[in-house]
Image (cartoon, rainbow, N blue to C red; front, top):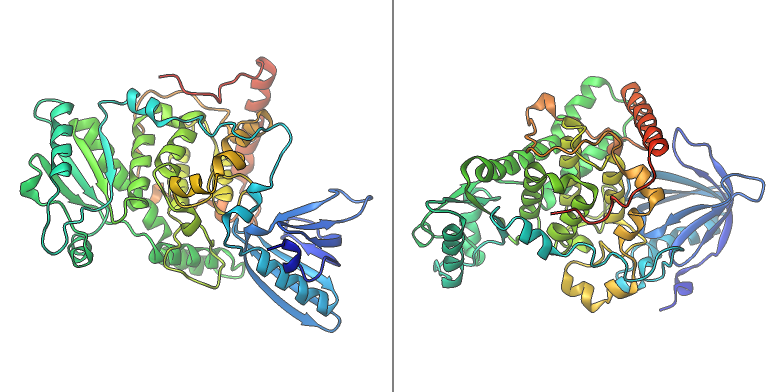
Length: 484
């Protein structure tokens, strides 16, 4: 298939409205195989506006007279309006965007064509070998898995039983183990009818099961959708806003995720216990809990390089199905059951940690925003596919660039680092009380509301601290590997 076959109209005259805080742009609109471009002309600044078509979540079009309007709702939560001259041009461009933004073939996506200056293929793909981490924390035993396949016959697995016995034996004499099940007791029981289930208590001596249900799948996606619907209504009263914010239950999901992670971390830190976290498939809520627990306990995971290593190990290599979960964001008109913003929930929880411990994370909000944007649509190949097996089959590591090589460029690091970072060797225990959790305005409201005065002041502090560090020392390669 050639991209040209899907482009009905190559260009048209258009005006772009980018939001309340941005001036409109007028010029020539062009559709390419992977991008939407608007060139305002040689006298205008900037010279070119560019949108990756893969970032389009939904398209709305309407025509009146001899012109038309296309509204693009993007996966990064932007809402863009294109006023286009000509009815036929409007309809043809809309159809082209619809076709090109929903291509299913991974190898036709932009990362396989992206060749930025200064980066070489193959760089940073092996930047985070998991073996190094496992050696460093050999006796911090934190496991994750999918549910045991016991089924209605309550089958057993001798290898699983031996493995968990060995874990307790290697930890320390008399060590206990906790199985943190991210499903409710009722859901775990019902899973037996479809082949799943729970560990039989008698077969796993020394292990105690705790149920800490976390939402995933469609309920979590619907929560995200309702949150963005509330954020997109500028006319509502304060009471209406607070009611809708509470009704979408997004902050409840944040609280439950942080609470479960704290439970796992406390078991290891305070009791010296071994922790096994599992859910249904072991690729969603389990990754959420183990990742947050490591950020709470491990100071190196809170560095820039350590955080990248954690995401590579716990999410990408562990098989979180990004291609399925992040196929659409909050604006799509379809609601497939496999879509869920579980990685976004993780990033929100990390933002809450950074807000409560503003000196303890080497990376700032910019890093979290970049990860959100790239997980849904990216010129890099890091978040492509659903597993390591698929990435190998598509030759992602040899034919696309790693996101980490892009983010670790000096000009990017300035925007992503926390200039007030002070290494903290202790665990950080977040408060999950309602008054301690806040809506992540920097993400959910970043395109629709100007920053609050406190955010403006913080940005000024960030700028001062960054300028002082830049003047006082030469740039170092601190974005490289964390030292054991």
